[in-house]
Amino acid sequence: MLIYPKGACPIRPGKHVRELHVGDIIHWRYGDTEVVVGLAPGQTADTITCQLRDPETGSITEMEMPADLLVAIG
Image 1: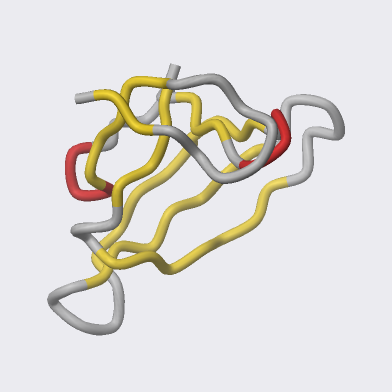
Image 2: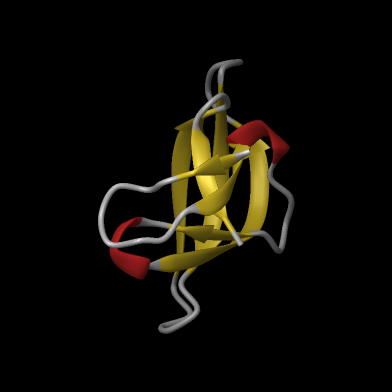
């Protein structure tokens, strides 16, 4: 499946958040990228908490996302 992220990004392969694996690279708007370094069930059954590392700064953030959300990977 291919998706087109909003912003200045080319068409990329897409995955649902529930299908992500540690090591996947998520492409956000305008070319920003983050690497998945951890996955855990969210506070509800329909969400997943992802730990994401910014490859430029090395900072790690946690983001709770719906399990059926499509994200661009590559």
